[in-house]
Image (tube, rainbow, N blue to C red):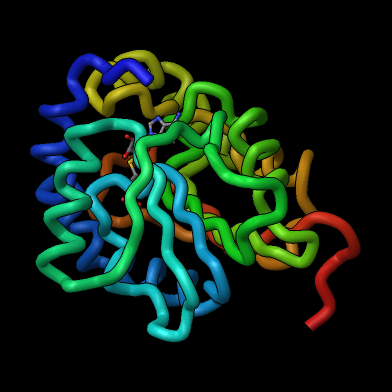
Length: 213
Ligand SMILES: C[S@@+](CC[C@H](N)C(=O)[O-])C[C@H]1O[C@@H](n2cnc3c(N)ncnc32)[C@H](O)[C@@H]1O
């Protein structure tokens, strides 16, 4: 995949830009989400690896897919700093180089806002998940408030330029629900970030029969 213009700059400011929001609750939200990871785990759009230290030790295998080389570079560095075992693969979510049904868990945090084609990315996630596998997601989404959604629409193009293609007005929960059964979902506010990326949803999704705990 061609490296996007600006991605080296984005990679260099990514962790400092998110730092405050991570301290104000995002990191604990990530930790809580990742507690449900099990078996063979794939993370799409793994970025600089802010989730890397938060996976439970009990998972069997961790594969991190990241198409932008500047992000992958930081991911490799964080992996070696943490001494965490994980394979890093240069792949977009829309074309995952894995066998059908080869993962128990797929993780997507703040990625479906940025992928070029969310429907295709989710179809790929479905394809690589085992029938009883789970998608764990935490995404910023279109606001349910008409006023904020209007601001998200107005800011979307400018924000996409600043944030390397991120679309702040996507109705990602509806897109996930079009291909999966959502088995848990919570709304939250991404504090410490600009208002048009405040609305967050995080939870779990499966396909096939609805999940019964
Ligand atoms: C906002 S960052 C999120 C990084 C990380 N998941 C996190 O939670 O901090 C979005 C990530 O998606 C990656 N990305 C962009 N296009 C993608 C695509 N088509 N498929 C998968 N990842 C993509 C970017 O390179 C970047 O690392």
